[in-house]
Image 1 (cartoon, rainbow over the protein chains, first blue to last red):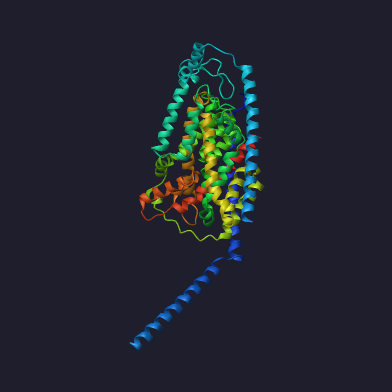
Image 2: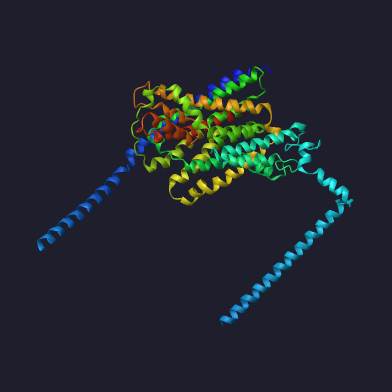
Length: 77
Length: 444
């Protein structure tokens, strides 16, 4: 075979690694952009916060109820 | 009233039953008539002694010891006597070794056992199970010759993959890219070997072998069937056995290339990734693949399809099927189909040895490139990366990530690298699919 296979292989290598890295670098940028946009316009954590505060409020109410119950029990007793 | 209805129903059932038995009987009659007519043509009465001799000549013992000179291989070519006799016996012993590795050592038994059993069946003389009309040959033509099974496996793998760690630290994707150097570095090595006359690999064959460095079974099989189907058996066996040996191959390379201080680097905790990000990601990557390299979209498309179904959260049934039943069924067929290529005449050739050697070089080079890339990235300002997760850039999900975690824990019990290593690990799958796309596009 006259064509230099090794040179072909080296060409393949540069083209292949170049494409893989180019793809992944573009992917990294677009993923960062996507995350930025999603965090800015479609924030999820705020909803989580509300539910957290809700549950803490409910917990507070329960605690208050328990304390009042304990006090009335103590006064009765 | 009730009685009448019951009677009516009963008579209807009786009628239907009679009718169906009638139909079956007539069909049966027809087929038996056909069969007897067929037999009358071919069958000639023989003396009993001759029948016994003929039968004995058809036994496996005779076929192994004194092979039939006219027997053709599954591809319809003449085989040497070695491949018909001793070759088959050697292959059956290799199959037993694969059984041992799969069962006693736990080397990827899910694929190694079907492959090995397929290999056992493919080496049976006379029966020609791996031939075009044997069931292994039928399985091969059904889903391997047209690259169907690797694609279905990719869908299942996509449904099992969580891109969360990659999304929370996207720059680790570069490690998954660097590890693909295992593929292309080995490609150069293989063509150099061919150039200096040690082996006669064509460029296609060299590419198919070097894809073992991607450490991704389905991708290797996909490329091998496309570029060099004659090497499929050896490539698949090399690929899966090295994937199983990741915990043995990788740690020495990782230790050799890193310092004690680097191995103890603690990485910042991963941020929370919202569901919407995970849902958009597969579509985003597929769009990029469409724009940059359409040749890679069969693999990436199938992968992202599985992942999209999973992240959508509304098709739990399909997701469950992809992750379990579908991938299991396909694994059985894929294994048997690959096993059909373990026939002695195709496996016991000098090239197989070179494939095994080049495969492990590809694996090691990929691991080293990932680790070195992590060290290189640490030269730049920003959050430091523990180089041990670089080795996870070869795909081999999730084994390579577990190895990173294990080696990291050896030096610092509190350093949990598993989730950090999953990022480059899944990026490695994308990277090797892109590399596969490049190779395919180069040959078209």
